[in-house]
Length: 275
Image 1 (cartoon, rainbow, N blue to C red):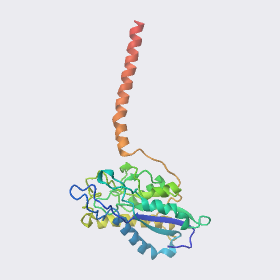
Image 2: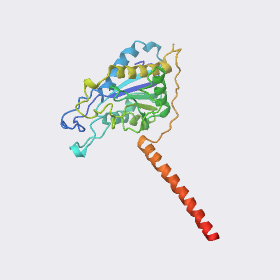
Image 3: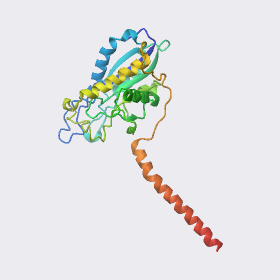
């Protein structure tokens, strides 16, 4: 969309679902329906394409809509899934990216990835491979729209190997909007046959779509008089993930107590020697 512009914003999602429900307690050889992982992201991109097309003449950016295959077929020796890596589609695309744009005239502003954005009780994490300034702006935009539950001020922190990572490695500021899918009692259906439409929330899809839409208007809508974006997104820093933070919180007091005991012991020895 808007191929006349030389700056490019990429919106991406994967459309494949895992061929075997390896986390399912009953149907581990059945395919995952994939309503959330990853039809939800694909659905939001399709709706965004419709909405943004009607305002394309007022947007000062070229927009790519990328739908990745083979994101979710990674090897799992315990279930006999061999020969595949994760993110095959996005890795291949970035390997060939020079075929899709003129690097002497065009450049990439950012890449936004939507993954598992449609489940009930949507709550995004702070994904640490993401360019922090870009992800932070998405969170701020969501909060400005009133979505404070979905974009919490104290999100879970973790690093996820996802389709944005090849773009990060290529040098494009990138952000992954994704939930806690590994230990989440509010959405426990990852890689099971229960990842179906009955656990999809229209409101979650709306929150995601409107946040990304507003982000684009903040940065690229020529008639925007509301919020202003933070382009360019050069600043990046990583936080320790949640498990590491827990370990730090456990061991810091232990280290502190041990240090105090060592000081006391040292002083007692000195006192004993002086006597």
